[in-house]
Length: 440
Image (cartoon, rainbow, N blue to C red):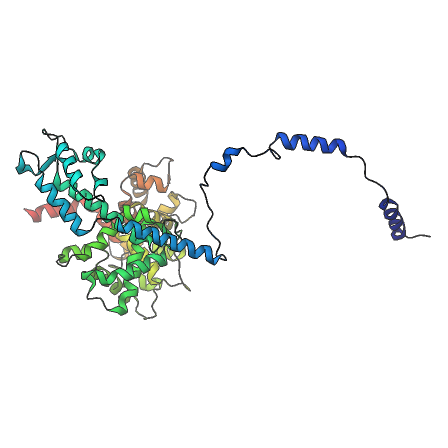
């Protein structure tokens, strides 16, 4: 008796010589619909004249195209740099403005007619700044139809500075896509240190810590989603670059240096605090070490949440993570800091602070107050007061948007995480009264 395998072989052999069914009709239908839907339609001849508006970046394997792109970008930035006004041209521009003042001369202003006369006399590189739009922007309803030459000159200088900064930052944009990665910005600041007189006293051994300190401010505020890159446009629009370049002034007052995050005094202060907290000298901070920060008034519950949410290494915090922590606490009014702190306050991980979360944090504050012999405040009243301050869109649920919108986010955060902040808020009226008495 033949097996099933033999029968299968016989069946396949009988089919091998058979011819397929006529598929002419199916082919005709396929061709019809294929042509109707554009599959076989001839390209319109105008497509040949439409320029290519998108060219994909060359792959990493294509070394020649990568090098060509780098050289092309370098040549482009060189041309842009050559088109910028030099100091001599700026000085000549100021002299021409001074020579063509409009009456009355003591106001040091210029009308549109004289403005155009100066435009005819300046170098070709200067002419782009003499537009009617620029004049209208600077015009402030002067009865003689004039603008201040000082304001116009400052406008030109600002534009030149922005272009210089854009070109300088673009040189470190390895990808050429208009943003800087952390390593790119580190290289930019490291090479800038020798050009800043206010940093002359820094030892080279401290350079890496200074660069880390400076770069963290850019990334904390300009990259809150932690993508690892910042748009060059965002760097130019914020004030941080101005603060950094302020260190070029040789006679910068000490008060301004202390207020400037990028100054040597500020960087040494922050790093000195970190070393002081690091009592076991292992280069990292444990929870017990971080609890000594400031006056040691941050609650243990808050610190627990910090170590749960923030990047740590075997339960300890490195300098970079510490910098984010410091920037958040020292700038509690900003939306970026509130976003950082809100993530910690949201102990349920649901994107909202509920009554449970408020109870959780207030209980820790109450415990600390009791340890120091302070009066305990009714927790229910405190929670109601917080909701009254925030006025959330949904009752008994505070979102990040609610916290930022209420304008009192810094106060609310302080009374939840800091015993000193809570005490200052609770006795604010008595403190104001005492201050008024002292000022008399």
